[in-house]
Length: 338
Image 1 (spheres, one colour):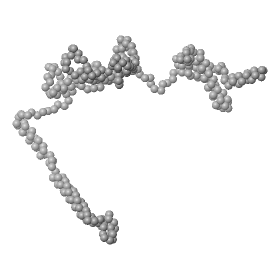
Image 2 (cartoon, one colour):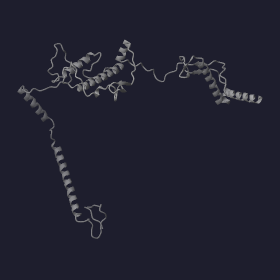
Image 3 (cartoon, rainbow, N blue to C red):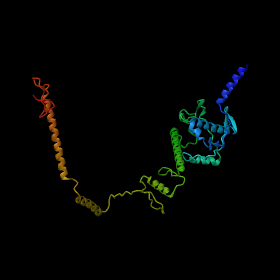
Image 4 (tube, helix red, strand yellow):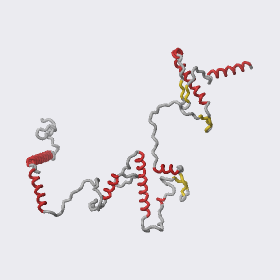
């Protein structure tokens, strides 16, 4: 019995010897920043021990400092979350530099500003909703969405309709396009507002605070939208000339002063006579000679091909003695002469 007790105590002692105590003594207390899980040890190092057993010394030093950090964490208030004990870390004491700058706050959209002003809380909607017609759960948007009015084969004409014969399906498509365009314009407005720039667009694209130049440009575009491109559009009594009119086209009258017309034609004729003639006789002659040379060369090539084909028409072109056939003048493709 005594041997059994001694053996159990020896095994327990060996087991405890593998694990060090949680109590660590330091001459100088460590600076512990629990918020950053950081410990700073200012104790002097034992240089002789470090040189003799470097790896073991650094391992023991790291273990002791980590143990002191864990002792500090277990002194903080704890709570149980999902069968796990967690500790709420305090605010960090040491300021660590960031790798990247702090992100700027995202600019609120017009609806977000209105909701914040009115105190409207955003509620997250579920992806699926109940479809009364199909009697099943379907997604709110996308393919096979619930309560899809585009799949209806019949539309009821309202009692207050101006024209009962209007195509309601085409009207619904047009209204959907207008809604999409309005949403896209609102999206561009939000982007322009966040970047502090103007809303991209031309013509009469609306803006929240139009400038004087913008109004002038919009007025010029409206004037040019007529069939006469603004030529016969009436002007206001005190209206000034717009600087966005662009280049003005000059139209000559169909009838007018004969003397003025004759002077204009004589001026064109004198201008042509004083300049280099349009047709250069030397250049035209050289071009004609070059074309004739090309034509003669083409004719020679065609005639030469015809003669060669005539010789080879009756036979293989070889002599009776089995020699090789001769080629054209000075040719060597057929082989050596015998």
